[in-house]
Length: 339
Image (cartoon, rainbow, N blue to C red; front, side, top):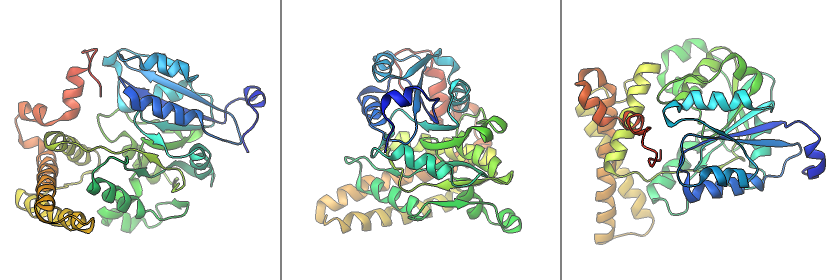
């Protein structure tokens, strides 16, 4: 049961919830309300780092009892800003959310921290993402199948077979998957291994480091958040360009080794999506319209991976055009822009 509020105030926080935000909008309010409803066996604090919001996100954070830190937009960095929040936090456990990741129930925080505390050698824990109710059917299905791969019970994962780890790219990807949209880090480990200051995949780069250093990570299936995006064609291509270029740079992966391979993958994904849509009862013109729309999305996804895998081949100007992260960096000086 949660502690009475007067007793919570007399004790230092056991956990710190850390949220970076810029123009979080209405959903940020939903996130803060869900945080306020958390029931825990110990006190916790909320720290929000705002990087130049113009939509009132700062006042919204204050009204929900957050400690608000404001930084200039140009100083934002995925790892850098989260490290700043962690430096200011007092909790033994550092819980990271994004401003659009909504805790799904009132024991989310307790469950996530409990998973991280399962073992002294556990560096961090992550929970699943659920698609928002209005999300595309394919988005809901993809998220469900991805996180189902980690099981239905709390579980620790470690690097137990170094030889297989070196030889098996799939195992490496599985072991270093992590998401700072919904994660808890043990402070004592974060002090030794802070999040890297990189443009993309700061969470997975961190997880790779701690897994290879001998720590475990935990999966908390009972600590979900609602977090999904239905990007359009161009945004899908840009986001996957950034993902593939970051994975090539930080992990050495070639997500799409050739254009021919990418087109074959796009075809397979389009057929998969059409089958999933048919399972919903769609048929005739309605099915084909949605299937064609998803085929365009899947083509954008694999082309983004192809261009990102081979990013060193392209002129710098093309790289700037294809990168969503570089676009965000160029726009950070615009006070009306939201990430």
